[in-house]
Image (cartoon, rainbow, N blue to C red; front, top):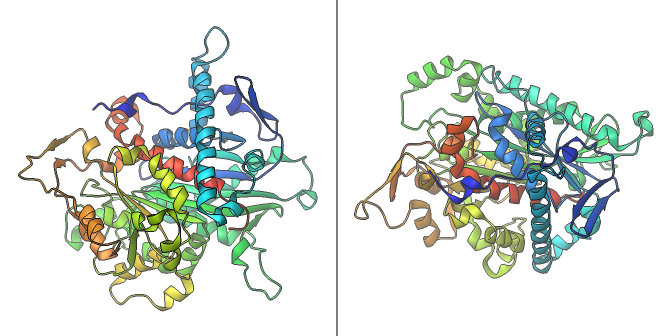
Amino acid sequence: MSCECDTIVPPKPSAAESLAPLHVETTEFLDDESIVATNIGPIHFCFVVHGHNGKPTDLSYLHSTVKAKGKGMFADAKSSSSCVVGKKEQDDNAVEVVQNGESRRGKLDRLLFSRNKKQNENRLHDSKKGSTANNNVMGNENTKQSKNTLVVHNAACNEGKTHDGIIKGGERLATEMLNVIRSEQTGMQQQEDSAQREPIDVTISIVGNSLGGLYGRYAVAELAEVLESPTQTTSGEENEASHYYLLDGYIRVHLNVFCSTASPHLGCASHTYLPIPRTAEIAIGQGLGQSGSDLFQLNDLVENMATSPRFLKPLASFRRRIAYANAYGTDFPVPGSTAAFLDKTSVYPHYFEEYLVEGGNEKNAQEIGLCFDAAASAQRKRDCPASERGLIVATLYTPCLAVDANTQTQEKGDNLTAMSSSLDSLGWEKVFVDMRNEISMAVSLPTSWSKSECAIQRLKSSNHVVTSRDLARAVSTSGGYRLGLPLGHNAICAFTRGTVSTAVNSGGRPVMDSLATTLTDEILMWNGLN
């Protein structure tokens, strides 16, 4: 398979950049221009979490892309000091040094820094024109840029351990996240008693792939229980507008963006690629260890994670929630219905993005209670390589309802309907991806056999709002102009493991480029109040 993105690999940071401690003065040089970041500001952590039988290096492309997009947007964008992907990049850089002492990668770094800086300025300018509220969030872009640091870390704690269940995997992930946060911020201030240290604001964003999405959700619930929650009013009620958790008495931890790619949020029971008897599901679940038992609902863990306030409240604390799902029968392990938590009987409303950006303002979004930046969304769509290639077929949003209210008003139906509606009520952006053109083992169908318009497109053309059950049917439809093996699960995340696997799954790189753009934009929009 050959495409433009096969030859475009995200720039890797120079060895000097990756090794620089977090507290030192960092300078990016670009011709005669230099930008110096000396102010201590919020540290934004982006944790990338692999899935079942995975390795942290499987998501190397996403790691590099997120970091590359951050150049020109943040004062510093780097791998954590303990990240195996970052260390591998350092080793790769060491062999690319040319005679003048500068690596080819370093030259690309500077070019990308210039391009991303310009794109970010344009996005900020367009967002400011389109939304007064966004002006308040962004403030002075130069000041904000000089203070923000982005740290990307691919979690390694679950490598070789993904069979022992979601609980253990989530607990290990929570521990690793805290260790990384402590390690990266220690250089920001002089070593002294925590009681005498100045408060430091850090944000947590998570990108969980496949089972990693469930690990991330469990880890967040674990953090909410082990960390202090000091943000209460004088009456003892929680102040939701400025909610944060406290680590070690001085690190204020804010939940920023949660994103999943092809994660089985509703489990795998009743969501196999082809329908199978319950007895077969039980046998498969038992054969896959504790994780299989969890996913095929031989226990009630996945149901509790989708309906219990213990899990829903921390997930609701994130500023943004985004779910990427494969459409049209292209994902064998995690069909789109469970990745986007759609249910065949749920009538929860989903709004197409085109309706929300109609007219270039937020009026339509405000009418249905959505916090939505139309100008920023429109700009991202214009810059979206996946949309240009036809890989993103639709983006929809669910309106947000109070978690407590939702638990009292769940729709009547089976447990899957309740799970779907409870998750939807938190407010999500759902991105549906069509990988059929990028799957090498696929063939085009004769025009007379294929439908002129795919199922999701037909829904979009008929109405601006659809129900969960409508989408569930459309996503499961495999009809269209191209037929292929359901290999989208690894392709959507540009899975990287060996030469052959990397080449086969390289078609998903534009999707990860688009995700990285959205993610870095959203991370930067955090202002301590939202």
